[in-house]
Length: 110
Image (cartoon, rainbow, N blue to C red; front, side, top):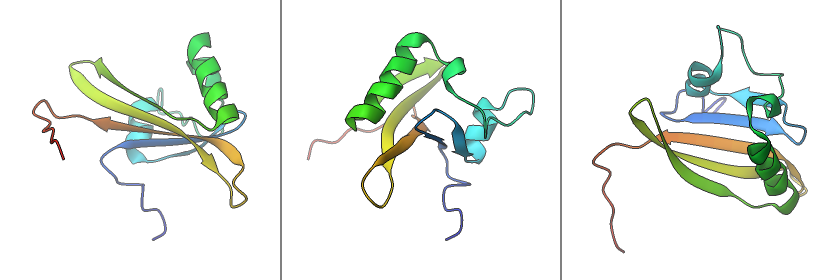
């Protein structure tokens, strides 16, 4: 199980507490690498507006998550953001998972 996330059908991006991108799976690289240049090792904060930067920092400080949907270029996506922790339970950064939502997404009441 070396890199289970690499070929998943969603974009997974991981950064540390400073906002430095540590990992991007294949879909994330396809989505975010500009001009073929990898974002791994670069800071993600300059790519975000101040409001988003503040939200990311707040989530890491308070160990809270954020989930929302967007539409871009006719594609609807769900974005899930959550802190990740080390083995001692300390927040060490953020994970963002972006999932394309089909137009006919079923919803069930259970």
